[in-house]
Image (cartoon, rainbow, N blue to C red; front, side, top):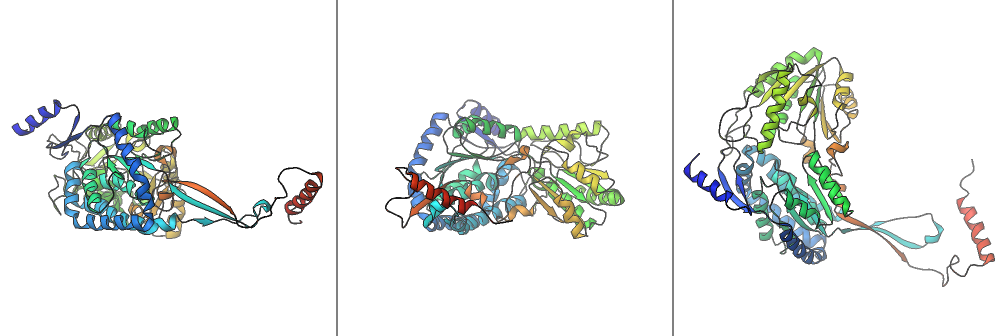
Length: 512
């Protein structure tokens, strides 16, 4: 550690109101950001509420113009944003480019285009005679102030990305990024300001968990991405105010390789989507089940591919395949899962040992001889590991894949597409792919979310990905009507008999 780095760390220790932001790949201190108090969060929230009505009144076209300018800003500043992401997460440059820059730019354009159609007023028809001739409309209005609490693994896609549809719907937004990765959000806030977003509509509130808790107490709706344990706490706190929440939580996503699969493609995807972003993806491949006839060949292929991966400090395009982990706590979890598996009889065919070097590192690791009692097959590892288990047939693979509290995503590989899709449809997950993995997330038209409580509630993307940031309002307009409705006061026996006969006719239903 250099003298300068030591001095910076001593200075950070003397500033409790500041949070130190490190480069997890090198241990370098990048900067410090404010650790906002509850009172400061309340002040920001008040300014956001004051700015929100004007933003809403711009209408879809006015808001879309800002979002499209921001889309161009992201493209024009792609290298700067990617390097900022790499510096605070340790991920490879291509991981930032493909999964963050590409997603962010697409999302601004998508929500600018789709918000008017997804949130369009809907005319409703009713068979109820009391509303005959009246106009019935279902419409959406913004919640008002939306709070987004983001994770550290994707500071653009899974933190800032949730803000885009909330803004498109006409809300003001408070974003509390992870204290480990706040710099991307702050940079994108500059981009929004340069793109013409009115002051106060979007706000980054940096801080620790206490700042996030303060945010929950100030907003009208909460979008949280993170661990299942923290998600439960957020939901419980929001419930005290009856504030709606949307949660994307843990995943232990299974991959099934059928005996007729294209093993080259399956092994390539297994290696890539288990190690992408150093395995720190909620829908990454976390466990793999392979039918016995092709198990040995598959393991050989995937081990060769993982062994060939270049892991190191990202230095720009093409410099490394796999970067570092981002969270110190996560390195400990990965190490424990691998250590416990090996102690229980698993073998690491590549990797398996935490290196002694500066930064947050664990090597890409393929494990075999695993069983379903091992922690690495049951708990979310969120690191560069791929445990591979031999199964007798697809029936056993499905049973084991579904034997989990998580249900976020899954994948099935097989040449017989009808059979592979049939297997995929039996997985208890919110999203499933056949002969592919993870790319479903890039289809913003396709809803994404968990099928089991431990993986969250609510959906990203698709219509629900923006309507969740809105209140529904039903509107009834009497266009023509009697001077006095037949059913109103004062009650008269003669009118009641007429009403009774009318209701009997209308509600008798069709004859058998």
